[in-house]
Length: 261
Picture 1 (cartoon, helix red, strand yellow):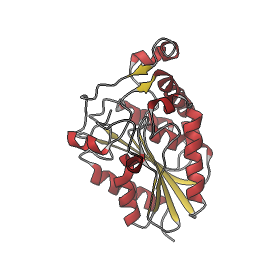
Picture 2 (cartoon, helix red, strand yellow):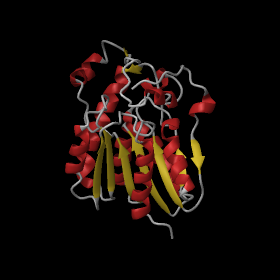
Picture 3 (tube, helix red, strand yellow):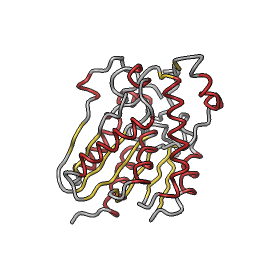
């Protein structure tokens, strides 16, 4: 999904944010080609309930498509890990939520970092259904940019797209890195031990809703798994019609597995 926002971005709009206080920390990771504002509403809801929340900018994001094209998926993961370290330095307990690719990165962190008490993923992919991506390793040498259709908005509330700020074009090299990240996360799901909340919109045209069931089935070793599909919502769950219920559901999940002292 592409937001109707200009590039380069206004740095004041897409900058990282910190909200709330206390000894429980929540890391909120944005999606591929996206920026921290897409999870700001969720952060505000968690902060009001006593959580210290951080929405970082992942490597290559929030500047220009060329900057993203110079990064690899490991750079995105490293920036998420550094943000988790910063949050953990201020908190006794940490949880992670992510939207779209940010959800995949949240799962990646949970597979390797024992500090994470719980995870919530919104429209997280572990595979992409576009058949062209099967050849992306070759296509990236033939065509540099992919430009999504900015008019193809799957949100129940189309006007909510204005809360998203993402690149209007994406490098085919970056798309290849995305597929490599998702392949890695697929293999790591059986390693995840913290409880995972899986949320998905049925109207999603960016991430096939069947991803939610595949994630759930592969999380065999997790302490607990709960999956909920929202029939009316599109890809950007955090800003669409069910956002209030989603915020409440994520808060309840985190409070359940990381209760206040």
